[in-house]
Amino acid sequence: MTSTHDDSGLGPAIVLLHGFPFNRSMWLEQINFLSAHGYRVVAPDLRGLGENVAQTSVGESASEDHRLRSVPLATMDDMARDVAALMDRLKIDRATICGLSMGCYVAFEFIYLFPGRVDALVLCGPRAQGPDEEEKKSREAQALRVLAEGMQFSVSSISTNLLAQKTLTEKPEVVVRVSDMVLQTDPRGAAAAQRGMAARRDYSDELANITVPTLIIAGREDGVRKPEDAEFIHAGIRGSQLVTIDDAGHLMNMEQPERFNRELLMFLHTVSEARP
Ligand code: MLT
Image 1 (spheres, rainbow, N blue to C red):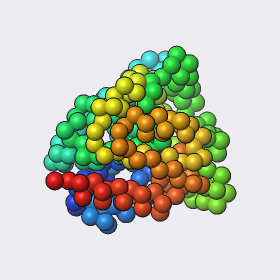
Image 2 (cartoon, helix red, strand yellow; image 1 turned 90 degrees about the vertical axis):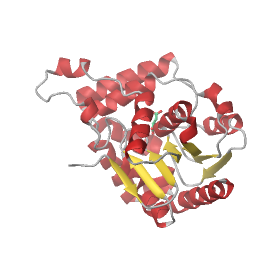
Image 3 (tube, rainbow, N blue to C red; image 1 turned 30 degrees about the vertical axis):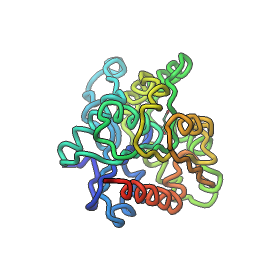
């Protein structure tokens, strides 16, 4: 049976929530590093993505029209509840929740739904604001396009938006890993997640309610998130820390894993020290 999550190491738990349209393999360097440093690292494939495609599958024999109409939503709320159910199955009561981009929307839902289960938050490339009409329309258009054409067209955004210049010129292996992840994504899962992100709430007013230690990580060359997005969240969550990583874009944990892991570990140590 294929697994839809990784669970490595022993110690305080950290749950890693991937971005879109990716899967849990984007956290490989963090899983290896943190599990070797005394943490239990859990990384799920979020609903409809990676190997977790069962919830959005529609029979291959269905007509194209049927396939287009029958793709469900994979909401951020669904995904957060899936994460809580996985933690239940793994007998993890509380964890540090670390998300990247879409994973941050899921993290915001998770702390809203299950505040007592969060030791700390790590928000990488996050945005708190909800979608406006233009964003909703654009996401629906992308969902339809991906259903009609598959994932290929999404690969072009890697060089235009997702990765820093240095990654593109000096780290071809990262570029290949990212494009492989995108191409392996089930178009129905991608469409369901796009529609889920279009249906997400605005988390801006909830930032002030977040009282757990929070680290925000931004990539200096992120073409998807503006620096103001991270600064807005930093200003909204009292006591939060903001770190910006040079020579990194939207996938800063894959582009600059050493720096990213160092920042994450330092933060996790401060969280452990503060624990009663
Ligand atoms: C992601 O990396 O998860 C996406 O950029 C999220 C989004 O489309 O808002």
